[in-house]
Amino acid sequence: MLEIRCLDPSEPSVPAGFIATRHFATYLKSLPANDALLAASLTKGLRKGLRKGISRAKRRGLEAVTGRRHEYLASFLHTYRETIDRLGSPPFHGALFEQRIETFRERVLIVRAVRGGKTLAADLVLL
Image (cartoon, rainbow, N blue to C red):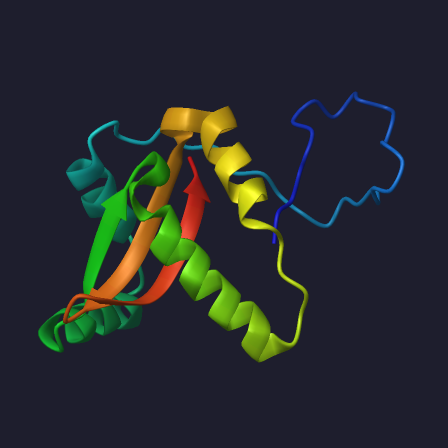
C-alpha cells in the first residue's frame, strides 16, 4: 500500500481520485545514514515481546538483509507477486517499483527476511 500525504496542513486542494482524510498522524524522525546503525536504531525502544520475537527469529536462522536500489528488486518483486496472488489482488507492474527506486534513489531501502539463502519476506521502504 502506498499513502501519499501532504505535510503542509494549509494545502487546500485534494487531487482528483484522492480522498481527504484526517485519520493519520505524521511522525518524522531523522534516521542514521549507515545501514547498520539504522538497523540498530529500529529495534531500540521496541516492546519487550517484539524484541523477544526478533531474537527468536535470529536463533531460528532468519536474517534481515538490506540493500539499496536494484540489487534486491528481483527478490522483492517475486515475494510481492506471490503475496498478491495469494490474496487474489491484481499486482502493480514491476516498472512502478523500478520508477520509485529511480525517483527516490538513496531514500529507498529493500529489506528481505532470509533463511538458508531463500527470501521469505521482503519490503520496499521509503526512508
